[in-house]
Length: 250
Ligand SMILES: [Zn+2]
Image (cartoon, rainbow, N blue to C red; front, side):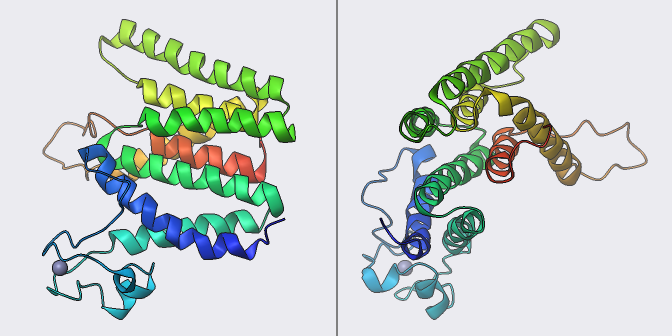
């Protein structure tokens, strides 16, 4: 059995990798070699430059070589990955904690990419579905039948909704990425939790919409809000909360 503290030590390192994934995957730059050089001056970064959080703090957020500001993005993702692990650690230990973290880190990455690019890459959602099914197979949590039904029902629900929306409004409302993410939620939580996940995501989505809506001006007709809202972050938060706190509809 691997002791739980290892997950907290690894979390910021994994956060570094997730940062590279978030920054590079949508632009098609290679992810495998990680953040190997300064984006500004191109100097190769050594181990000293890549210690999560510590390097950034020590160099006061600047490149050690060219002094260009690095920005808060990497330390933020590293902190977020650590927060996911600590949050999960207040609920679970052992294998369950590792699984929580795998799910949480994947959701964090998906939410971040979707918020920036309106994109939920298959390369993340599809493995997440398989991992949920595998966890159900080995740990029976939830039972495999419930997990498989959850994945199928999650995908079909959102695809049917998207088709209906296109019929009525004549444009796309929900992407197939959202359907695959809900399928992942179904695989991890079982079909019984899908109602909670969708309701929770709708609530988060409404809050997000209100929070990011530009302020209404009196000389204008009501503001319609942004044309396209990423739904992935709301879904990701909802899946995470239902995973840790359990379904709230009973
Ligand atoms: Zn530099």
